[in-house]
Amino acid sequence: MTAQLIDGNALSKQIRADVARRAAALGARGVTPGLAVILVGDNPASQVYVRNKVKACQDNGLHSVLEQYPATLSEADLLARVQALNNDPAIHGILVQLPLPAHIDAHKVIETISPLKDVDGFHVASAGALMVGQPGFKPCTPYGCMKMLESIGCNPKGKHAVVIGRSNIVGKPMAMLLLQASATVTICHSATPDLAHHTRQADIVVAAVGKRNVLTADMVKPGAVVIDVGMNRNDEGKLCGDVDFDGVSKVASAITPVPGGVGPMTITMLLVNTLEAAERAAQA
Ligand SMILES: NC(=O)C1=CN([C@@H]2O[C@H](COP(=O)(O)OP(=O)(O)OC[C@H]3O[C@@H](n4cnc5c(N)ncnc54)[C@H](OP(=O)(O)O)[C@@H]3O)[C@@H](O)[C@H]2O)C=CC1
Ligand SMILES: Nc1nc(=O)c2c([nH]1)NC[C@@H]1CN(c3ccc(C(=O)N[C@@H](CCC(=O)O)C(=O)O)cc3)C=[N+]21
Ligand SMILES: [Mg+2]
Image (spheres, rainbow, N blue to C red):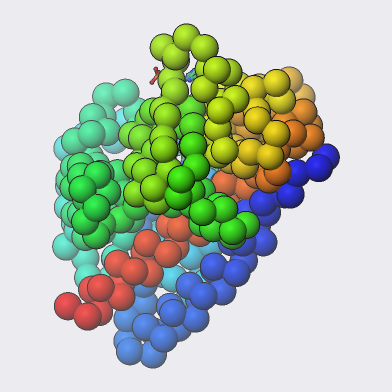
């Protein structure tokens, strides 16, 4: 391995310490930042993520409420819960864990969250703000990826960035943030005929697909920076990303691991967004 490891746990620790300081300062003014997390159903992966989020709040002086509902919860009842949290002054951020059961329209649920409390950055208003460069919540995963680039002094300006994946929660906002940072951005997806042709030209590659070994060493330009968003399980049930880490880390100049890379940074940026929502509410 020749690449520098971009340690998401270490960077998270630094940023979370700052969050904890600012949360304490707000607390001294009588405002405790509050996050509500709603989990519907019993998806085991979702339970792990949600528990990590609640624990991160506790560890850094944020108040959190976890609401768990059975998979049979009706859409109307979920919308009513979101509306109640919109009106709850102790709650500054609302996160509805995805995926939701099939009988619930996730889009409708997200659009019901007040944009002022949309700490996931998934609301159309947040996505639109990002698109036109207005203030708004940035989606936590791409936001965390930008912080990881910054942490190693990688300024995207003038670089060619290739994003693999175009989902509304990762790929698309990732591309927008890189564009905002003045990279030249290529977005690849399942209908891209020759993925390697694009990735080989990239100074920065972000893989956000959800399939193992989407990016292998032969697809990477020597010295490129590689960010692995993927969360998959290998044949032994071990957590792994989209990137062939062993191969690519011999070619890249810097690379994020899985676990311990983008995952913890996603939670860290959720704390940052919640803190900022509370700071804004305290000013208003
Ligand atoms: N670490 C973290 O904090 C987070 C990790 N994740 C993980 O990141 C991964 C992506 O998540 P998400 O964006 O929600 O996933 P989606 O399934 O919504 O999107 C996957 C994207 O990958 C594209 N794709 C699929 N196959 C290929 C291929 N062979 N070549 C190129 N592109 C392909 C799809 O293209 P098309 O649009 O054409 O279908 C789609 O745009 C998952 O592993 C997920 O678990 C997600 C969120 C947070
Ligand atoms: N409304 C909503 N917001 C989300 O932000 C959201 C979501 N729904 N649905 C699912 C995805 C996925 N996601 C992760 C967060 C942290 C880790 C994480 O902490 N990963 C650890 C490992 C965790 C483990 O051990 O399984 C790591 O990479 O080191 C992973 C994945 C947030 N998501
Ligand atoms: Mg990770």
